[in-house]
Length: 310
Image 1 (tube, one colour):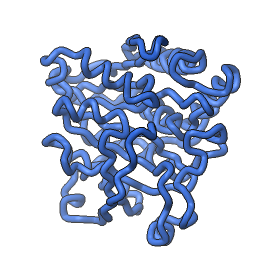
Image 2 (cartoon, helix red, strand yellow):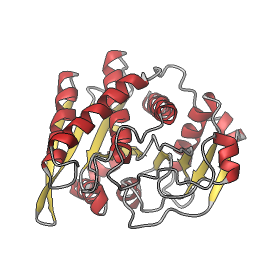
Image 3 (tube, helix red, strand yellow):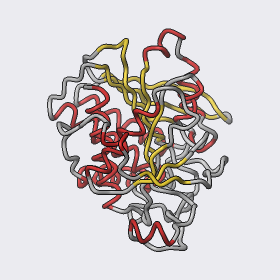
Image 4 (cartoon, one colour):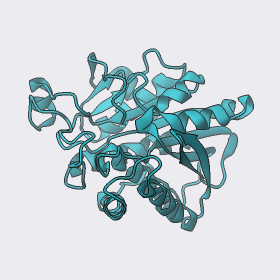
């Protein structure tokens, strides 16, 4: 997650409201095996180790990450394409993966950025979201899920340099193709070591975002996890979709912000300490991930997808 726009300070507690209770059920979604997500994170770490310690835009570790994720999706029967763009004199890449079937005039899209900063391997930021999305995608095929709506995934390049990849993708779409995307869900930093459980607030977002917010809240409620709403503004890749009028939502476990005493009482962890002390640092390795947060968020991603695309 890029640091250019600060995290909104106002966080609103979102308990089990009437709206949450009314959110669509997603009982058919699979329980995502966190060990599989961790295996993907180990692969991202290995790629970074072999390529100068990072997976940043314009560096070989980023393209190696794209190629590895693409290979997994191709083997699972997704239709994939790599979209290239140029920024700061270097070639960047977005990986787009379409699940077979579903109404392409009614598309649900999920995404997260695959690049790291140059200073580290970017395992929490954003290997966690990328790996969770990959495993959820693989479980669509493994479980034989046949959604009514079309499902598309995006792994974005150069987010850390100003949301470059996702913005390029949205701008590349025709007006007609943009109108076919009915929802976009973004997952950026889902395993912070001192985690919060934040859901993107629908306030100020395009019409239709409230239903996504409530669906994500309901997913956490099903796990007996309290959430807070956060106004992430233009901090991550949902921003380009929101500007295009597409309903957006997402989850986030916190970056450089500091966990409060009330949050520590509610969620555990350490008050007065950053959600991620290794944010944008070389220590953002596989040791910098909360398995519990990673597991919970992966399950919520699946539940939201199954409910939204069914």
